[in-house]
Length: 148
Image 1 (cartoon, helix red, strand yellow):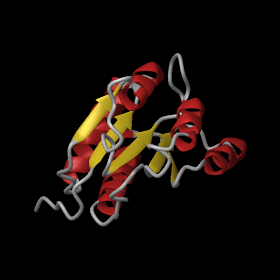
Image 2 (spheres, one colour):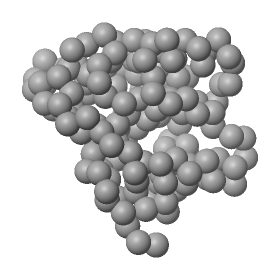
Image 3 (cartoon, one colour):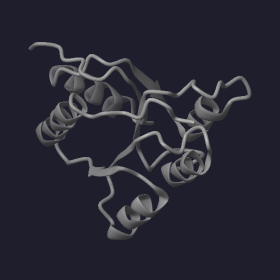
Image 4 (cartoon, rainbow, N blue to C red):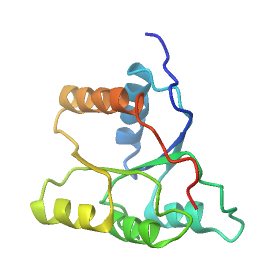
């Protein structure tokens, strides 16, 4: 497959399930996503990654976040809430990718500012296919240049 790199951005994947993380990376690569992927394994590490004391205002410029909701310690709702409340991270596109399809959770994520909400399908092939489709979308997405 030809590797596409239409928009240079960093994909920050906040995912606690190591198996899902590997599957996501593998299928994004199969879809032609050649962007840098940073795997953050839990909510506390995600907040540290985005809000540590040494951050620069442009540190997360050209970033897209792939966010699971069901995380240990600090859940995805709280991460989304903090990202969208902060001047330096509020414009980062957030794609929620989670196992829940509860309409209340979907509504809350959009109210908090997520850009896309996707439910992880059950079963390997369906999951892999959904991630490949996500990868095709990521190949044409445009990301804000100035995040803060």
